[in-house]
Length: 322
Image (cartoon, rainbow, N blue to C red; front, side):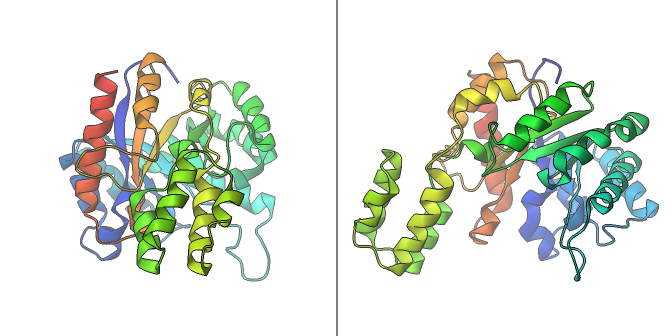
């Protein structure tokens, strides 16, 4: 990724609640993104297009026209490798390669310069995509998502392939790999399920102080508390080191700015944006930070637009003041 100034985009996946309830259609999501101050858009094709995985030119060209209407930059077409699409067996590698090529074509027709896939593509298929990416002039990246991190063996293979691709093959680090603490909506779920206040605070304190899970298990927890403690520890007690972000940026075609909940203070206690944003500025990362709100997985009571506005204010302020 060329050095420069960070750009701020949004994944339409962030509007999942509004899209599911039909409050917003695709055009409405893009219009709302524009109103919130974002300049670029990604979308999850399997969610956004009812015709997926076989999408008509009419749908793709209409999407392109909507983006132009609101002067929003198409950042990335996010494909989906559903290995369980068939009822009789898993998809084989050639079938997965075919669906990847299809998504690359869709990205091109809709005006997107890159396409995102998942690590299920395998290193062999990923490398085999290079000639087609060159022919279509479309970049292809793989999302690095929790529980993966830069030292997972398969990712070491991916990096070697990326380095030989002339910039066509890259990564999309999801910033959840740096998440170090449960977010508020997850904590609220635990309370509503019956996690006793004193026990919950003790467990959270142990996570903050990096105490082993065995100490938490010795607190005399009930079954509900054990389940949430297990969830908290397995997802948030062993994040990637923030020092690993800067070396990742040379592979990053974009970044997924994951977040779950921001309060009125516009601060995220879970993912260390106060450390992330200065690194992006110091390294002069010139790609897109894509806001990806996923609080809807835990609560539908939150206002998506309010959350996305807070995220925009938080990230821009931390970047400008770095």
